[in-house]
Amino acid sequence: MRRVGIGLLLLLLSLNSLAHQPHDHIEHETNHMLMDIIKPADSEISKILKIDYTNQPQQVFHLLSTDTPPAQTIRLSWQLRQSLDGLHLPTPVLVVNGAYEGPVMCLTAAIHGDELNGIEIVRRILHNLEPENLSGTVIGVPIVNLQGFHRSSRYLTDRRDLNRFFPGNPQGSSAARIAHSFFQEIIAHCDFLVDIHTGSALRTNLPQIRGNLYIPEVAAFAHAFGISVILHSEGTEGMLRHAAINAGIPAVTLEAGKSNTLQEPAIQHGVESILTMLDKLGIISNDHSGNLLESVYYRSEWVRADHGGILYGHVKLGEKVIKDMVLGVITDPITNLQSEIISPYDGQIIGMAVDQVVMPGFASFHIGIQDTERKIARMERLPEKQNVEKMTRTLESE
Ligand SMILES: [Zn+2]
Image 1 (tube, rainbow, N blue to C red):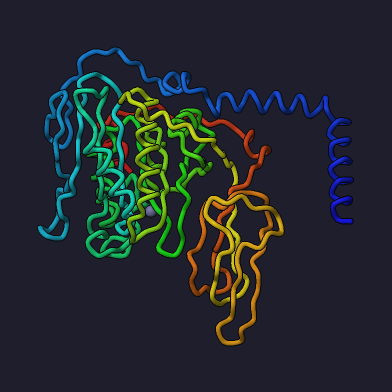
Image 2: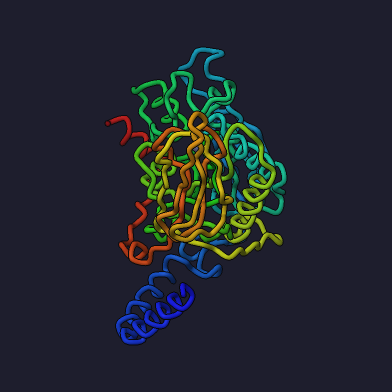
C-alpha cells in the first residue's frame, strides 16, 4: 500500500513539475548563472582571485623584522611586544619563500589551544614544501594560542576565546592585545588565509570548508580545496576569518575532526585538500588535483536532544539522512526510558556529538541542507585590501 502511495505521489509531483516547466526553467537559468559565479571552473579560479603569475624571480620576503631570501625556508617567532617573560611564549612561525613571484598564503591552527589536528596539518604541509619549486610565499603558524595549547585548553589563560577578539585592540584586554599583535604582524601580510579548526571534544566535524560564499572571491577560494563539503557561513564579529575578510583578505575555515586528539583520517584529508588548493592557485604544481564530488550547503541546522540521558548515535559522520530518520537514541540511565532523536530535515550529517551523557537541549547532530532559495540571496563585495600601515592607523584611532 505504502509503495503504491509513494509511486502515486511521485507521479503527481512529476506531473506538477511538467505543468510548471516554463517557470521552473527560468528559475533554473538564473540559478545556473549564479552557480557559475559561485562555483567557478578550475581555470577561472585564479582569474577571480586576481592571481597573475609572471614567472618572475621572487623578492626577499619581509616578516617579523626578518628577511627571508627567495627559495628558502625560515623559522621565526611571534611574540607580544609588551609581555611578561614566561607568560607569553614566542610562537613559532614558519615561512617558505618560493623561487618565483606569487601570492602570500597563510595557514593558521590552534587558535583554540586544544584543536590538535590543525597543528599536524600545518606541520606536514610546511615541512614538505619545496621552496625552489614554489611560486609565492606560504606562512604557517601551527599553534596560534600557545597559552591554551600548554594547558590542553581551548581558551587563553584568562578563559577568553581568542577567536572572538580579532582584529584586536592594542589598548584592550589581554586577548584583544594578543589578537591585535597577531593580526598586524602576521595576518595583514597575507593575501589568503586558511584558519584550521576542529569541533569540540564533545562533537566531531566532517572535514569541511566554511566561508562566506556570497563573496565571489571567497566562494572561488573555497572551491579550490576539492573538499567534499563546503558550508556557507558568514562567521561572526571577532572571528579571525571575519576580520580578515573585512581587511580584504579572502579567508576560509577548514574544519577537521574533534579536539584533544590526533585523528589520522582528518589530518590526511586536511593535508590533501590544502595541497589541492595550493596546486589550483598555482603556488605549487604537482599531482594534487583531488576533485571530490562536492556538496555545497547554504544552510545548516543543529538537531537538539529533547531529553537527558546517554546518547548513542545511529548515524555516521558524512551520512546522508532523510526527514523522520532516527539519528540517535537517548536512554535515561535511571528509568531506562528511551527516546529517539528524529531528523526534521533531508540532508547530510556534517557534525555530530560523540556518544556521551547529554542534557535536554544539547546540540547533537549538525545537518547540511540543500536550500536553493538561500543560495541566490545576494552577492557581497570583498573590500579592497588595505596595506598594513593604513590598518594600524584605523585600529589605533578606534
Ligand atoms: Zn576552533
